[in-house]
Image 1 (cartoon, rainbow, N blue to C red):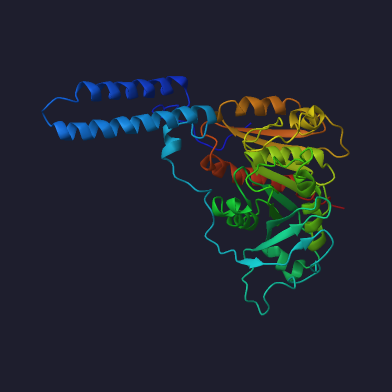
Image 2: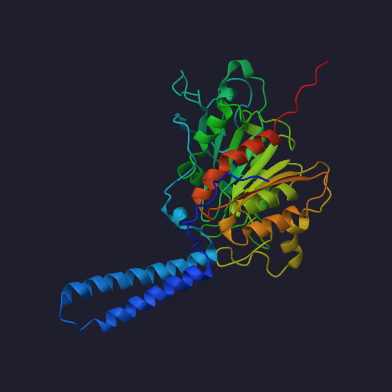
Length: 392
């Protein structure tokens, strides 16, 4: 077991504790009482009223936010709030963005050697750090047609590697979130380029599919009873389209899936339910029981069998033809997330393998995931790497 964050200093208060919320409440009540008791005093009357009103309103707002945070675990400490970070440190490289036609589950684009036909001719695109492709996937089985991004590594365009087939990493976002969240907040294409160029992960294709067929609804990446077929789309249609249109390595041994928050649940659930597609998965701050809430709507319509079939804590016991390798990450400041992760990890039985990482601080937020992403990708890269050649 390891961690990706430094130990928390003594001054760094735990802002999710009940004592902290109580302290904020006491200060807020005190501010209200002080404002009322001093309201009619003549000395500096106008200035004092303005200052006490502003302070009281500020404390009321902060106390409400603190109470919400104590239940949702967005930020665990003072330093977590003060840290401003949109994503992990990214190499200062330029990864060009290009557009491609829709990807169908039967080959629509040439997958052979050389640059794809939709790449601008004449070397106008600098492929030294790879290319990010904006496209969409037409799902033959699910019927969904949704946007997606595909990262192609620099090696994909290397004439010396024109016959090579590359591992695949599928990336699922949290909710609310889209494929562009990985790009805007995480700068994932730069992270991938840096990890591949430093040799920490093999040159790989990364696919970032939209996972919510219904606008404004969290699909949980499952096939809803009588509703959207998100699992079929993500577990069958998207891999089939990528496989049909790009030079991909054999699955499931060299295919992995990774996500954060809801995407972490998706990664674990899809890897278990589609053993012929994914051989490894990484879940950052995910959860392991099927849920419904106001963002999902009634996904299961009371069907307990379908709910259990989408609960990794239950389905990890299923027999499978090939072992599943999984990487689980959570921050101690995420409340019950660490206990849930450890409970899930305890259900693994050989030949399946699990690696758990607990960060000593951090909350359920992008800063925590930012620090966890490089190590998670490095682990996933090793998991889908080809076995070392045996000297003859």
